Length: 200
Length: 200
Image (cartoon, rainbow over all chains, first blue to last red; front, side, top):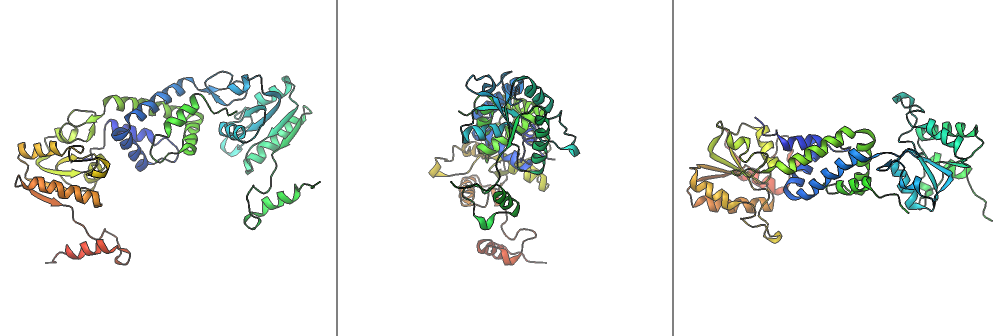
């Protein structure tokens, strides 16, 4: 005897595909959209539709882009001899916002995880190896996450790169800026000690 | 120097119109959709578009529905002599799920809030009054929220209904099922005492 059927329920169900959104939040979102922000709903629908039909993986760096070759890969200002390997398009944004890295990127869209069936091909390591072979890359910066899977992935890529005599580096690990020693976990502290730098 | 532009960013911005979704969650949602669940994105876009073009307010009870007269209002099984007044379509669903109320509903899509410019017309009280006048309604159940605005709205509607000699009731207030006395706030406890029922 529930009235919960029809279009509004379809929208609520569809919203549940968003990560972190359960039936209750989806209901709140749907009612908000159709009671107070129809323009927003329409805009969201249009944007999603355009993105579904146009977004693809850049054929060079594998990031999500509406162009076959993304803006960074097609920019003549970026140094194509240096490639920074990251797990997700979000990491590209963070790195571009944070510092003045001027090289290219390679987006794995995942990490090695054999138990989940994610091997080297699934994250495009064959394409990366092809680039190392063809493009005269001189440095590979491994910027995967500092998690177990991220470390394993970085280690695996480092082994591939070694065959091509390419300089391979990994992001430094240590104390985060503003971090207090008292609250640092012991692994990070160990990294901070091992990687300590001489002050000239 | 950010790569954060183009279609993906448009989607992220559009997702920010959802309540409780900020730039970071929107980014996570967009990447999830386009890396792992394109079907979900397409479905969401289609549902939103259909809902934007078809969802309207039921001309009798003001709930959101794709029909001019919603399913409850057009159902011959519902008792049209009783109207339950609620603040939101979600309340209709909750009441229909919870008990065997068989009357009609009237959805205010809001509550009286003069400071925000929400007066009797904005929540459709003129339409409700018209129904009281025309339809031979015998009971009005005021099921607005137990908040200050909800109480004020209920009081206001009760005054209107009094002119038509209609029985007006308000949902009972007291201890919630499973509630412990120790953690009850004093207002609720007061309601529970005032509204105590004789055990036969």
